[in-house]
Amino acid sequence: MRYEEQVLHSEQIELVPAQCRTEEDVIAACRDADALINQYAPISRKVIERLEACRVITRYGVGVNTVDLPAATEKGICVANVPDYCRDEVSDHALALMLAWTRKVTVAHQAVKSGCWDFKVTQPIVRLRGRTLGLVGFGNIPQVLAQKAKPLGLRVIAYDPYVPEAAAAACGVKLVTLDELCASAYFISVHAPLTQSTEGMIGEQQLAALKAGAIVINTSRGPVIDERAMIETLQAGRSAGAALDVVECEPIPPDNPLLAMENVILTPHVAWYSEEAAAEMRTKAAMGVADVLLYGEYPKYLVNKEVKQRLHLKECCPENRYTALV
Image (cartoon, rainbow, N blue to C red; front, side, top):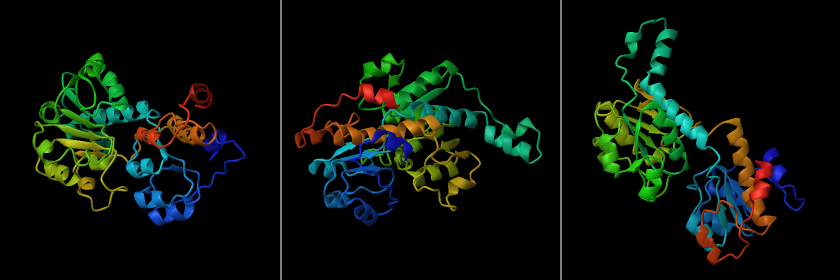
């Protein structure tokens, strides 16, 4: 807890670690808490309605799909995340998965380890330059990925209904529809947050539209892709392969067909991680609590901005204290 303690140094704030897996666990541990810092525990409407003193919930990470935002807003609780802590890490990982799949790194590695020294085991390998990378979502992380991918000779397109065309054009990226992206991209890299509207957004229709040889990369959240439909697409040979850091059920069950597929690379939800990113995430999550409890301000990374209609705090002025700690 050293990063959190560094931030929440006031004697008036007691840090209480708790391992919670169910709604009942959270209620029992957090009923009287003034603030919650959450990772994977379910902060549902049922939980929020039982919180008697909570003023702010922050999340270790970007996504807030574990928190019922409307319920928190109705109760006047600020919800904050850390949207900018792992842009390099996730974009690097997506690029690494793309390169590893294209150059058949894992196939070659396993062949050499098993005593086979023959480049033919990797056939066919195609040239990267000149191919199209399609980004599903064009927020902070995919914007960084686009800048890293273009020097490799990749054409970059993106789908994001919330990003203005001018903003994408400033990055040298063309906005297209999701169907156009799936039909024209050789690499489809998924970066959409998990919400009700994005769950299963890469489904049967989108997967059926993939061009021959297409590779699907996912470093966002597993359920953004309809996993059953993707497995069927891979088994039928309509997609060349996939490189996945996330899956629908984590840890991945031992009977998941993806584990037996030679054309699938899997990593264990590690794209976000570096020592520096972990420290930044924990520090900034704690700062979201400090903004509210110690400074009487809205959190810098306030997600549910509608709460300002129910809760009146000062606007956040965190630059100096954030810079000093991160």
